Image 1 (cartoon, each protein chain N blue to C red):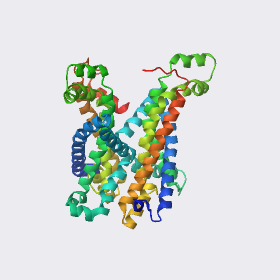
Image 2: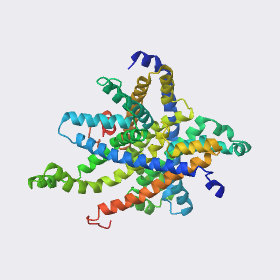
Image 3: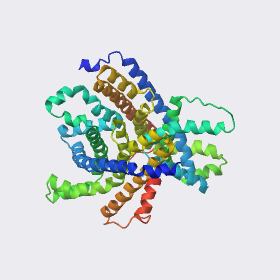
Length: 244
Length: 234
């Protein structure tokens, strides 16, 4: 390990880390907003809603992220004339736009499947009671189903967010300079390959922990009506999640 | 639509890439199962040192992106082995088979996830059964093989299925270190014929085929594994 090089690389790695966090910070909330309607559509009795949602989730969960990314960034170039005519080529020409689009759709599909399971796990008696009280679909979904589903889904959703953050390292392969690429560029220039890769691995490990810690705080708030979970502080439980 | 199905002479390369993807995936699954068994044994061990080793293994692997792990291990492990042997044998050169290396690397990564699946399944078998088997005079190995394994299998299968689905998609990353998998050939064909979308779509279809078949295989295996268990309508 060349610690001097690590110290000198910190500004560049910091910029890369900011990019990684910004990409993750964009894709997670946008993907979340798509995932909820997707899960509801997937559970709908209306086949016109359920079938497209099912196909979307199946295709995005059934193929590697890397192929999805290449399909949008390199693949759509095959139709650049058409896209120019439609006036949307400026969007697909940019690697970052393509990366964000694919990350959002990808996490929407994975989270949608997590929320589908959670929504189906809400106690049937609660829904019957809400119906009997005269709540419309919209009201009972918003007031009864989704809040409880979120509690059920939260631990699995935490894992999904950690995975998504790690998956953003793949957008380095379409020239977006996030954390991994910023380390890779220094590694290639200085030939200190292991120093740089091990440093970047350590940073990813810390970010993974930080995400689990923050989501643990949210979980504690979501579960505030119950007795405090055994196992002590959020920090201890976050460590337990990471090391389970 | 037929135009989309015309692979313009790259069909056999894509097929060989598909075979490599599947081979690396299945090989890595076997390695992951072995590494997972070892990892679970460590984590459940009475020795604090082994438990610590299991802890470090699963924590480090699960906190770092696959891409970083694959690049570091794929290029790193052969070099480390070669340099270590060179301390004793002058001019030692190790010729690594890239496919075998990829299988070992992906297997080691997913072994960490398999460790958790198998550790959980190990604990589902009641201790009394294991103690009874030992009291009958069965050796540790026989107790594991005859009593523990057949029963934990039922609980481990869904988890193994999940790991397999993630593992097979992760094999697409071996194209980054230069292996000729299905994504490598799709990329190559797409670039040379200027039809990237068509060939990448074909690669995606290859993965969908694998995941589709896997779902059915695992559903069958799960039905079979619980055939001796009484089913109650819920």
